[in-house]
Image (cartoon, rainbow, N blue to C red; front, side, top):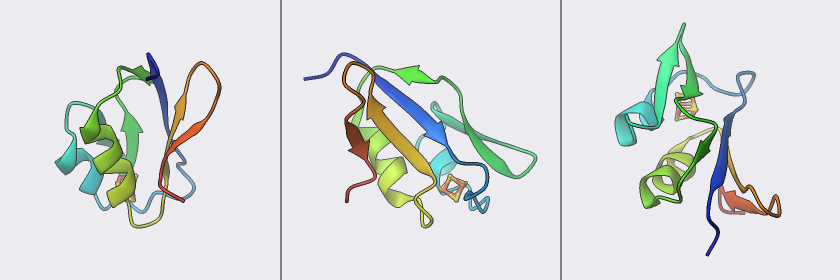
Length: 75
Ligand code: SF4
């Protein structure tokens, strides 16, 4: 099990649905209509995966900080 995940939002992809902020308000907020993670590195949490996998345009990318392995979205 990885110890930490890096969370990023591609601002060029995000269409501002706010689904991620609604799913995981402790991890995402909208700034000027675009989602941004509250923290770039987080402890592994199911809700982060739920948010990433719920994004309709796959703008949220979650990777393992130790080996850069893609955690979400699911391929
Ligand atoms: S769910 Fe995706 S498209 Fe919607 S606000 Fe979050 S990152 Fe943007």
